[in-house]
Image (tube, rainbow, N blue to C red; front, side, top):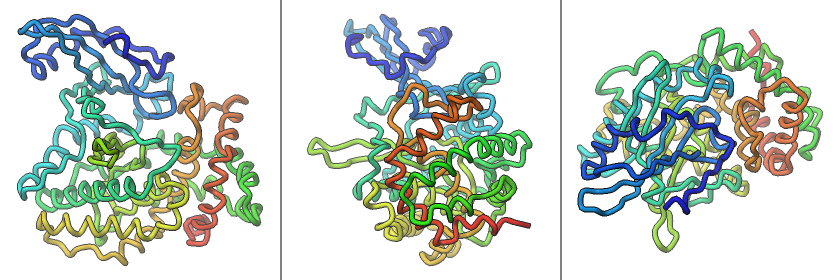
Length: 428
């Protein structure tokens, strides 16, 4: 088995306390018929550049079973980034305590809602263990790769089949979250903030990052082949406009149809399995760190900008909203949602509201350049936000990459013409 173990990130330092002793409890529950651990091998679970907010390990454990056979189990181990690699910034957002609540309480409850009406819907992987230790939170998950689940290729974008399945899954998750809230009352107050909070340290994080990225972004606009490129550079937000836009995300409209948004919904936070003939079979969501109560526009904007294949992104934009809405209504009805059902016209309107546009700017400045950039050992949150020549060079390389130019040439005017990039709207 060890011959088959591949480490996709040799540079990752794995703490020595992540050992067989730490896994004793999980193995006792998950594999009660094992006698002893023969070999314990922790490796990185993903290549660099695939996850910027946590450390992900795949743990291979070779077991001797009671009947004398040998069995290999694998688990996914997730923990916070070390402080010096960007972890202290990430911890200011309170992501891990929120994710612990999601896996302990809400996700099992959402799946139970469907079970109660006879629908078998899995939304997320099974979490076998979560704990806090010395101020850090750790998770041990089932390894979905064993069930032949895998990540999609973020650089290619999703085809129509994957987009449809992803939007259906998002609708299932959203519908259950709205029904749960109707039955149990509001979610805890930390679920009313996502990427943006009122904490001074979070303001500093966003403003500093924006200021660090701004020059490279404005320079890159001129490389994308845009007609009247100078017009877009001139309309680029000031720091004050940017922060006002950030704060507008906290203006919740209680009269709107609201759900518990995933908050970071794009292709790398989805995993899919396939039938032997290659047809897409199942799809589930991962990474519930930024879940936020608000309009489904939050997840839809993020997903529709970041994840479709280039030839579908704009051509099918409105159709994608419809595909999501059709499934949402179906799920709300079967779960007996009592409030008025959201109308499609209202959902479309919500995408263009002032307090949702932050998710557009945040995704095109931050996520999209990373998604379209090939895996690179230097690609980390730490390097991307470094105020050094190397950091500036990496940022410009990412933003002027021909792959992003090919997308932005059409996407930027599309957003601009809808008023989403009208930053003067945020002036007091």
